[in-house]
Length: 499
Image (tube, rainbow, N blue to C red; front, side, top):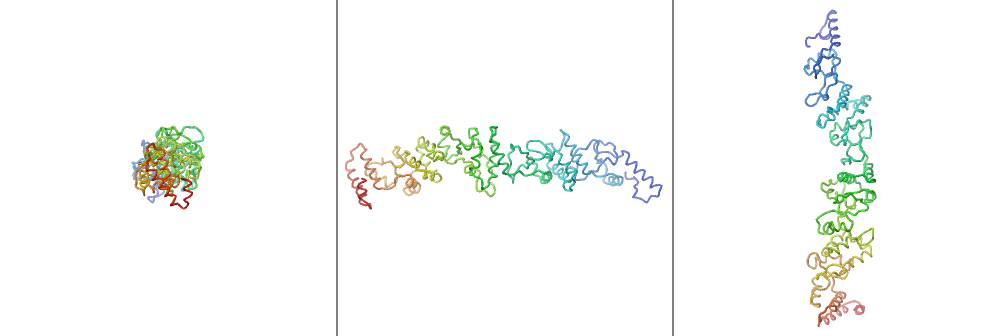
């Protein structure tokens, strides 16, 4: 090869110039160069030189050769190739690149594009190669690339861009559920910037968030099966794409269904869901599975909380907050039933089956739910009439009870010989100041007594009258004590009449 006479390498006389030209013509017509694969002889015009961007990281061709082969043998040195260029040897051009890509895609079993073991580096190099027509605005070649099935979808198939309607798998980093009849690019395929640029050029677009939310909710308009993992995908997207304008009514008004802890999927708008936790006054502790069944309420599946999504930037709601505020999953046992405008069945259940925990439950939920009861007189009267556990084991209507304040209990012992008055059995013993601070709502809102006033002293008198033993001189002293209340009042005559 290195002894080949070149027309422009020497000042040939007419005779030798003609000989050199004939040699070049013969070289162009005769198969004199070997191919890379099978080392068969082919003509110079039939072979092509690979450039660095057409090779993988190991220096091998990105694509297997065509049949017949077009890759020049690697046995030729760079100096040989430079000489051969002068007699017509050319580099691979875009049309050959596209032929090679189509050949690869046409191989059902040996395609490197579709092989799951193909490296990210290889895909990156091919993406840069196939984007060349778009960079140079070669319309015909752009259409050729669009017709190639080089876009991998989440379902495992590969499609061409000219089939239309292909979307990225995320919206601002939020994964789109894969069961919405949207054709989504496989997430790992868009992580590389070169492949992402190619997909952009091919017309892959980001889906509209509102459209995706609508598609999710539409999934629940029929009774087709939705798995727990799919449900979790749906809720994750709805949470992570939540905006300030979204409200509970927008989702509760839909047919959205979620899974309970027993594996059933139930409609959100007609079901009552509670979270499972170990709080002493939580639904799991106070209702349990038996109570939930009896009351027709459910515990949301704990699977929803195993790997909760991180709070999105700019949002003030955690995953648990969103479940509570937007989906209506309850963190506290319901005190007031807004559908019946009355005390909830859960509240009455706790009073009946867990009387020792009722007051603690009431204290736990009152800051958040007390206003609902106070705004409904029937519910308020019902709650005041709930029988609660007192110190001596008696159950007495809440409004007829007293806080177990040391000074009141001392007065009761002085006149009754004990503390048999309906003093509430609070969850934990405490001093008077703490009791007044922690349980003030019972006094202010629910009629529980906390003062040594005329009503309290009349209660002592009633207790003595109902007792079987002889009151002796205690009743005389109590009448004097009652008279003292009347004397100290601003309107003593009214109190005397009441007495």
